Length: 270
Image 1 (cartoon, rainbow, N blue to C red):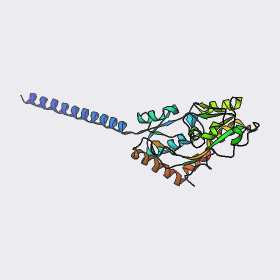
Image 2: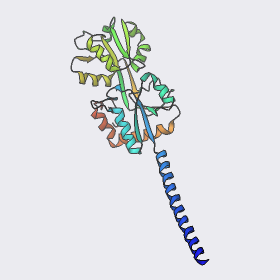
Image 3: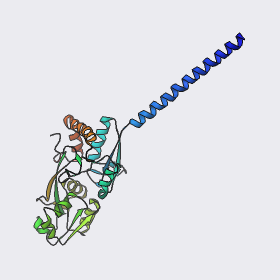
Image 4: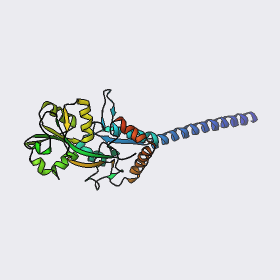
């Protein structure tokens, strides 16, 4: 009987030890799962045809001024950045559905202040007209009777449909494009006579295409860029904005701006 009781005790202790190990292993797994679930992703919606703010480089990677800013914010906050190219016409649906956390891609604040929760402005931008250097177009008055291009749902289009509607009425046509790369191709081929575009985009395109283009001196409109969050999402806006201002203070923001030739356009870090 004593031998039996000793054996029974030994078996019980073994089961208890094994049970404890299993419990610790399960607890460890649950902790890992919880840690993974709390790791934050930050999904940025952007137009992949909008250099230098967001575009695909020669290696097939998405890059640009805004995407590098977002990457630095994520690196500092320990977040995982998800770069989500979107159809610009669908940006509001993408944001409201939760497919993206913000619109960060040369996004104009002016006139949209009540539709989104915006960060502080970080770029002072202008809308301009780009024409061929030999087109004989020196001012906006020379655009009368000409074919002009613009991107759909853009700030330039909003200006031409708003304060500059009288100017737009003088055009022979106003063609709308899904992206500015296509617009510049038509300008190059002569299908349009001028293209209304953000000055940062204009500078980038002209630098990459050569000296055959000029920017008309008179501005179509002026504006500022901000990061657009879902209306009421102040918590996420505050987190991103705090880090962006930190980057401006320590010089990283300006370092990235200089990489893309935007140091004269930015309004942070000066």
